[in-house]
Amino acid sequence: MTMIGPENADQARLLRLLRDDGPRSRVELLDVLGLPRARFGAEVDRLAAQDLVETAGPAASRGGRRSSLLRIAGRVRFGAVAVGEGRLEVALTDGELTIINRYAEPVDVRLGPEAVVGRAVELLAKLQAEAGLARLTGVGVALPAPVAVREGNPVSSPALPGWHQFPVRGTIAAELGCPVQVDNDANVMALGEHHAGTGRAFDDFLYVKLGSAIGCGLVHGGALYRGASSGAGDVAHLQVSEDGPLCGCGQTGCLEAYCGNAALVRQAVTAARAGRSTALGDRLAESGTLTIDDVAAAATGGDPTAQTMVRAAARRLGQVLVSLVSFVNPAIVIIGGAPLGIRPVLLAEIRGVVYRRSTPLATDSMPIVLSDLDDRAALVGAARLISDQVFAAR
Image (cartoon, rainbow, N blue to C red):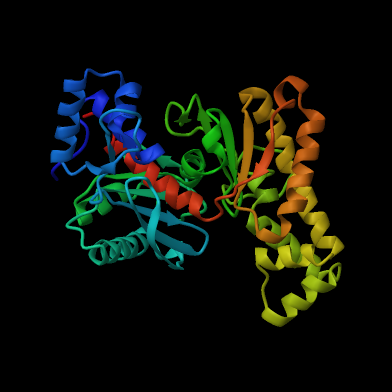
């Protein structure tokens, strides 16, 4: 595999500036980078020779001779893969991480990593062919599981049965002939928020990802914090009650066993069968099963049992966030992954617990908000993940 990318720190800074801020004039870039004009020109020429940057026309006049705009070259294209709850998504982005094209389809992760990763490779190859590319610049992958980032392999997780230590990164890289980076979805979504969402304005924030697999991404000092062995942010299996329900991890009382989508659906089925909810009972009788969207629809429609379940789950999550906020002291907490119908109730309950029980110093100016990227967070974040690698000095 022929490696492309910046040869030194100055080239890396230049590429990341163009990725994050879009086309900029040579004069502006000279000011920011603080390089001698001749050195700057030589670095730009070397990046252009690799098809990493290109001229984008004349810049606005600042008096005197007009400068030209530079941008990430049009041949720079990143692939993004997000494996989610019953859904596989792939996308193609440009060098500024704007999504150009995407595919999504249902997927059963229980089919095993060979089948799911193989299908992701097929869809990426299709996007590559449609764009007329000889190869992709790189591919980022988001998985709903802990990931050993250095190796690019998922580590034992109830959300991905049979995937333990499967070489996701190595498999995709061998098939597509480009660099690949893999991380857990909460970290990836935090990167997406930092690049294109509410988190763009903050260097220190928590991103909480809800769903069947709960996770937390921490951006600290403008960079993703993974911890010593890529395990930071794994809040799903924090024990919130010693005698709580059994979790998929084999322990009892985990946060995910109370607040995950599967947990809420189990509670809803129990309530429906016990006759405590007409709305859920009717839906169960009609379809034979319930989903998290059914729970959200019942709560939105005013069903008191469904609303009580959602509020209870939100309070449990809020209790965990109290500890996280007090320890990390983020500038903002961003919450993603919640079903559309229950977001207002969920957010109100979480805010109530966190603001009531946290210290004023930690929360006095700290907003708690919903993500505005929705399902784009994982795809933009996956492209950001691999671009961080490709745009790092060799």
